[in-house]
Image (cartoon, rainbow, N blue to C red; front, side, top):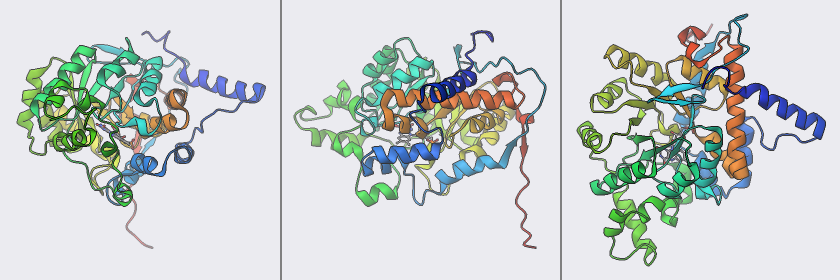
Length: 405
Ligand code: FNR
């Protein structure tokens, strides 16, 4: 994609919103504010489903800090630098993507909308944004791929304690045409989530989010009866094999040997882990703390990002892409993460709230609003392309004074 055919996300969306609202009396169907959107999703969902999505580990300090930590870096806009045409496109693993934005892997989307991942995948495909399909999806690897068609899809792998099952997922993803593997390493077990514990709610035990397992020949061989005949036993087997807390970095080398797909290791916070990931065969990493869903009172992901970027550069791995999620809500968040060295950001909760409120159209609208906000904020910062964003776009806010006077 050249600069000239780069879509003008901000202008198009603003023109659409204001003309539809002012001339046709049709205001946007979804609120542009993340906080109002979350409230609309709460309204639309069963209380336990909303709690599952909105909730995080423990006292949810990480989730809150993920958002507020962005305030440590302030964008310093530059003027009169010709930002009339803006290029948001990025290259990753030899592919050109229209914008530095992917849809994060989010499991169990059937609790949000009856069309679940199929609706989200269609919206992502429409916009050309990579859709990251979760291992814990409510729809199979193959069915999600069918919705994506030629549009970009990556597959997120939860590494099962049954090696053959892990290998089978990788093979299925390759055959279905996914372009990269996202290996999530921060979830060997599911954490202590107070909202879910309070409601005694885990969707998998309801048979939601297990489509990839129930359809897998290796998984089915582990069962005495097919899941269709004895779903409860199949769910219990899923719980047994879901994760493997005994994994070490050496195991990543085994996975590397299984596939030629690019591997992104997701869930990196410590710079040394980023280096170990690349040393063990990963092509890149995703700095993420799983949206605060795993460890309470953990380092906010945006604090980890520049440390990881610098460490990889110092170790001679400066070419390994670093992607980012956890706390991305608005265009300015994306500009900050990109300026700190992320190649792309992953949008998480905002898009599934769109799904909850209005299915495929809701996901599309959230993504289009986000792209518009990103495009406008980039231009108004005085940058005509994502490539021009670096740390010179930011100023670190002074540390709060400890003086009480
Ligand atoms: C997730 N996330 C996630 N990650 C992953 O690798 N595989 C998965 O199946 C899921 N499932 C999932 C479900 C729900 C309901 C949420 C909210 C999140 C984590 C996700 O990919 C991403 O890291 C976070 O959503 C980022 O945090 P924010 O920005 O959404 O708060």
